[in-house]
Image 1 (cartoon, rainbow, N blue to C red):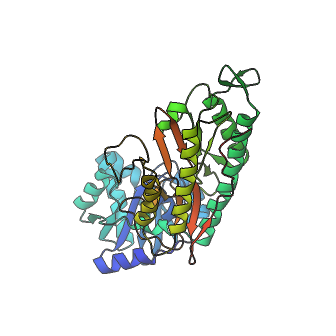
Image 2 (image 1 turned 180 degrees about the horizontal axis):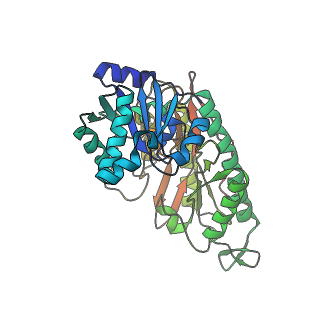
Image 3 (image 1 turned 30 degrees about the vertical axis):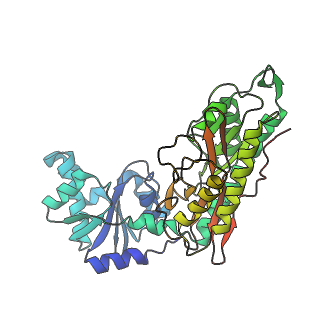
Length: 391
């Protein structure tokens, strides 16, 4: 995948910088996006008018030459890192090495992300290099608009996600009920056991995740409560899965709400309202509208039914208490925002639509689809059915 970095080149030209500099490891999504290289230790990537240049350790040099999108890859040893460190200490020695690398590329001024290491920045300034923190989230904004290849990566991750959701739904459906608690293979069915089923399924599909949400009853009333302990009959179970492909590093995201048994009338009403809010958001979704516009459509549905939202009551702790969605890609939460102050949506934006309602006295309901904005409107990348009761 070759990113379109022309907006970055234009920014450097307009503001008079020689280059854009990142120092981070491969877990930093902007570093991964710019360099095309995933390494466990920090390395330096320079974007300049003549190309992308990497400065890596000797340990990573061979792999970086094969795997990165760098036009040139240099080793720290070429710039006497060990000698610099021995003579000047780790911090200044490293800064001298990076300064020499920049000098080789005729770079005297760089713009850097806000999380650029302070020690390196100060050391470069001491060597006469101008380092300016970017006034805009340059790469984050560039990354927000996905190429067709990136959209395919997200689509593939979502297919794996649907298999994991199916596994979670199956184990809930197959459970029996004893004294109000779900039972599986003679033991109480717990949030932890369902998460295990999800994670094993994802591993088999080449995906992984650090956390997932399987929250029941009052736990589900906190949108980010992971859930724990036995799952209960007749109560809403929120299952929110957001895996990352091991191969492409792109995420998926999806939420469904299930009840094993007989849901209360209030949970049924909440579920229907939330699905109506989801559909209202999708109806509003097209290029040129803002994420705020889409969020307003969801708030309209809930408020018309007499339920609180953060728009109607910024202090409410029940009702619709979060944004409608977020961008997704190399990060599970990235631009654009689909909520208050959400940006204009453009073709290539991949966003979640995830309305929900929450009250500890009732539980929680959330439904989440993953969609891509297109020239004509949107494409829903989620094919999983929306059904409350599993039986």
